[in-house]
Length: 177
Image 1: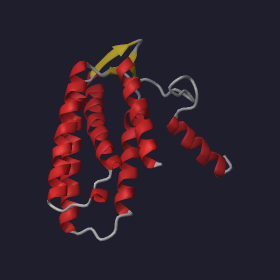
Image 2: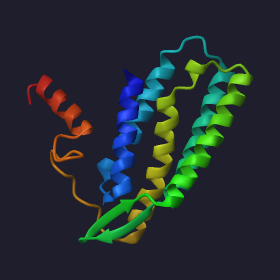
Image 3: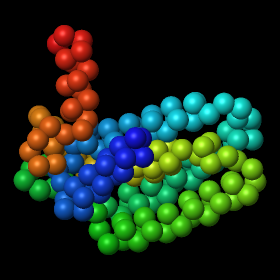
Image 4: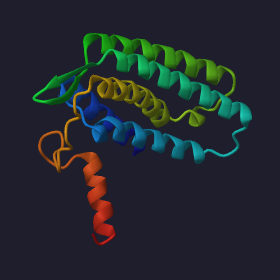
């Protein structure tokens, strides 16, 4: 179930950014925070991890965030229609392919050294990579002096309710708001 959710979030984010989209803080930071949270939750479900295991996980998270930051440096951030926009470039995809290869090598090394596969949640790896990207893009956006785009109330990929807003609506409904 979580693999499907992660795949959907990643595809939605990549497709939107490939086409180019207004840059707002919620869309920039919500997916990596959600994915990282799911990855931490999955890691906490794994019992019997020792300090060495957590060291591998931490090193992988740092490496993933650093590779995400490099990817973030390749994203085109520009002003359009009075607000900031972002768009993935060809270099973004080149860095993504190199990042996947580096992370696959790191995962193979971790497995060779005895770290169990379920101690390396995919959601955590993807989440910290997107978080590294978001931090660099966010910094570049703030440094530009141009305003972030306003949030699109209730607008998803095709004008429907987006995945983050859907979760908010469900929580609000359960709380009676």
